[in-house]
Length: 111
Image (cartoon, rainbow, N blue to C red; front, top):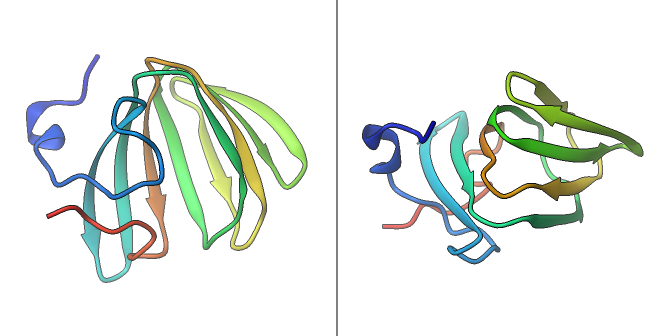
């Protein structure tokens, strides 16, 4: 099920992935960033690290390697990525996820 209009009408984020691969909507506060992500194509997420992140899969499938441990997450599964831990993975087309970043400026908001 797609995210409702009031979510998809939120501002997008300036992410380092093409818009034909991932669509984004976001809410930012002084304390963090909540990202609503819809993956239109299969995507490789290169290994990287940043501040703390928590996410949940709404629909689809994400294979994540977090700190050297690989696991597949499906609808209803959540993941926690501690501060500075290297992670990366594969995300299947059709996946929808909600990610929360402790860094309010993790991605710039598009205006």
